[in-house]
Image (tube, rainbow, N blue to C red; front, side, top):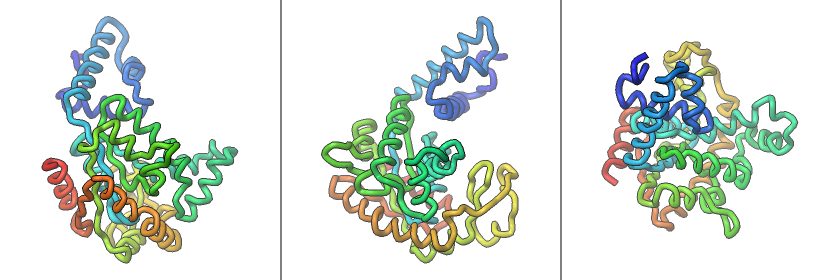
Length: 288
């Protein structure tokens, strides 16, 4: 194995370290020890790669991005594109909590089962419970020097600013990343269009990538990994209407609160093609 093994260029090293680091509780040394051969060069390789990561984390500007929009507006897609283009960690809280409440190992957990009932009805989860979990993940991400992007979170005013006893997510992000390094976007898509988008949306059961549009409705396999495409329970018409109502009544007002606290809300037309929306988001981040 060469000094860098499969890491041909620095960018590949950064990507690999970012992915493996986050997937294994953000601890790179145990990860690489399991992947690299034993012997003299193994420790040397670990030291070099860890040094590269620390160099990257120290010198690269760290940012936090929040993307808002109605269910089906494309905020998850835009967060993924931003993560891929700028090497951010996309903390998809929707997917995270969906997995958490539906995990069979949590069937005996009364708290999680109560949250599951809310989730399956398309309602927002208990803000205090969500905030505690999300802040813990954010602290771990910031600790290793990674930028982060959220698609739809925080979803309630309590999650956003908390109260006298509990620090909200936005103040936490301000202390970890700096207020000037927080970028907030709102994708403008009419609720009626969101409803139609969700009706035809399919999700890969393996990689989680979305397939949307009339042509995608004829597909049965993911064009990326070949996994089976299926509809999410949350995309049931009844659930979609509930989710849109929850967004308009409990999440949309957050934008006004953020502006009152000095944050700029960058409004982007979400009806354009995904790559066009992504280019506009990248342009804003580059200019702020």
